[in-house]
Image (tube, rainbow, N blue to C red; front, side, top):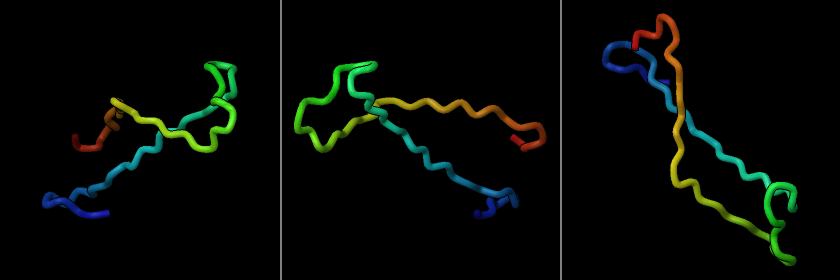
Length: 56
């Protein structure tokens, strides 16, 4: 962690977005022979409630 000019601790979060493929339970299963899949997240919104006393 780094310190900001005001002496606060600075940190960063690295989000992980998972894709669960359930072979037809919620969507059509992948085609036969598919070995790899890729997906893109067009928008991601994170709500982070402020903590009491966090100085923000």
